[in-house]
Amino acid sequence: MIVAPLKKNTLFTFLTIAVMGLFSSFTVQSNPYLKNWKHLGNQRVNFGLDKDVIRVTSSRGVFTKLKLNVTHGTLNMHRMVVVYGNGSRQEINIKHHFSRGSSSRLIDLKGNKRVVNKVIFWYDSKNRSRRKAVVHLYGRN
Image (cartoon, rainbow, N blue to C red; front, side, top):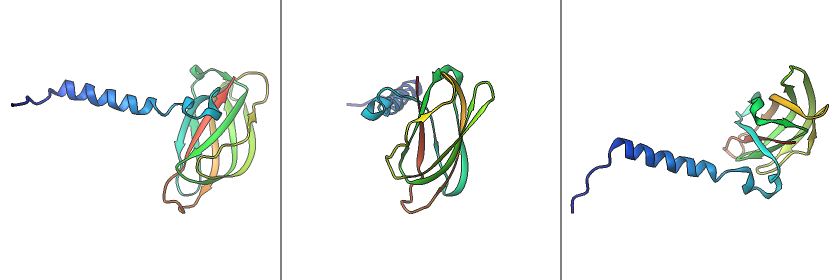
């Protein structure tokens, strides 16, 4: 039996569906502690002392609380700044060592429900696990 090679469009469609299925399995619902939370973004961090930004669009909604979750590696978080949709800022002193799979405390946002534009965070990370940590940001209305 001779099998004809797959057309490029068919192969592309198959790979696209496979990748989408892979990413859809990593939703917030897979972690029961984050069931009522909306994933707002994530950032893979570098080793050493650095700062990174997670950008959030207004289409994500308005929030009263934030939470961080760290996967793949460890890091020491020093502080973070939440920049709201109207340009105002809230500085949060969050000195905390995150081990792989750990989460932050609940972070209350000032004011009523707020649109989050971005979150800037300062951290240091050691290369002990040889895996770069990924910081996930979650919001709750």
